[in-house]
Length: 261
Ligand SMILES: [Zn+2]
Image 1 (tube, rainbow, N blue to C red):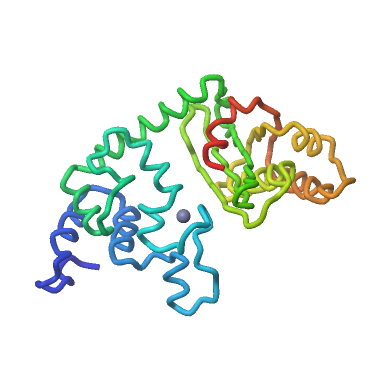
Image 2 (cartoon, helix red, strand yellow):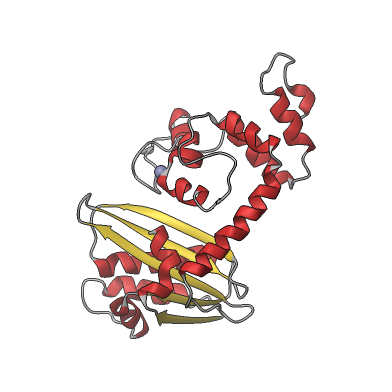
């Protein structure tokens, strides 16, 4: 879309002007534009277009997955914004629409601020996880964790993939309906981690979990018991990787995945 395409009376004109003159990758510019136009394929938008799906946010399971929910109101989004220590807007308590928020950031040279926030975020992760050890160069470490709540009868999984320089390469957090056994939810977290690694076309991986039974059952290729088929599935997902290891770690070394689950 060209800047000139906006009608002269469009109150969003200043936003487009700023967005189009920023020195940012085209992919980011298009994403930001779609976000402001509310045309991203959120579940609410897909449902509006006639797609027959449940519109509840898969990350938190609390509300329909609208544009505003994804970026501002979702508990998972709030955890990400919470890493921005000196954010110019209190995004945890903000009561603005997406365009107002975008304008605020564009007025405040948000890219520079965002870069600082990313650094602060990775520093806070390494502080809270003092004993986490980075993988060797070329290898990616996948930390996975599953959580299950007896109170609201729900479960969730969290995955963090980092490289040899401790940089976060990818993350994932999924909400699962229903209460699962600890071992089952951990196996699902492992599956989720391996799928994410596959999506990112990683070839050398180390998978870390803090649930000893899940780790030993996968490494022993345990086929009996009610989760035998799940462990078999995990083993077959591992075969395309050029090198892989599965390790059990203490919960405190697995904190990043634990926080996400
Ligand atoms: Zn949510």
